[in-house]
Length: 357
Image (cartoon, rainbow, N blue to C red; front, side, top):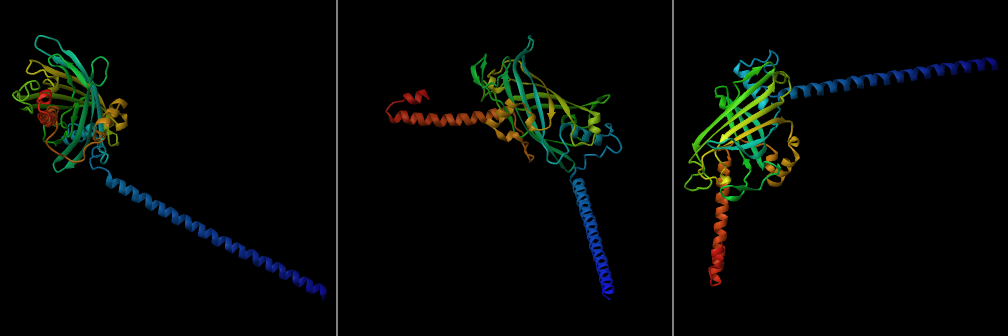
């Protein structure tokens, strides 16, 4: 009987062990099911986020960006040519700033003489564009510095052969804006081009003939004529393969030639002759690519030039208009100082200080 009871006890233990193993297996199976379900849910959520991101990105991309890529770029089509020009001159990336840096020389030319080098010239333009009904607004500002023709140092004063030592007034043109569309002429760029193999160039021809901001009567040492006449010839070069690439911007180079009157601060008066600017440059990827010395000069004098404007404004700024504004400001300050010194001299019973002023 004792042996039978012992055998029964052993059988009960084995059944208990079997039941325990079955319970453990069931728990393990449920855990695996929960794990697989978690993976499925997480994958679905990740896929949903990815799809939403793609939709958002597609909605934010500019509409022009790849209009011609699916069928190939046809520069003979004015719409394609305009978009290729914009990609060359600017960038389709939302709200991005395009930087064009340039460097070259300025010469004077008079009748009966060859050109004489006066300055080295360096600067940049910062621009963005906005699409508007019927075309585009290009919004920019630009600066440039006159450098010593031999040492390359940025000039603050210059020895004028007509007036002795004069203050150099660098270029601070803000804004420099224009509008363009398919019906505009070559002056604004876009629909005309030259192609040689994979190389494409887009010209800009700017002709200026207007009443000068500086009259000879009011500014006899600073105004050469009562009318302002000048011409500027740009050529923007780009590789056609970069235009067809789906990136929002294309690497480009530029040449810029300008023919214009004497600069007001040179104090050449009405002498015969003109200035010739000969420069070239590159499209940069960011402000940080501008040469360090030029960036440091901007950051010391006017930090707004570290970015492009955000709104279209008129009229545009020019070196002649800037000179007139600066001249009037200095004249007003000098008049105030003169009156203060004259009053101080009279109060002391003499006019010495007034005469010195």
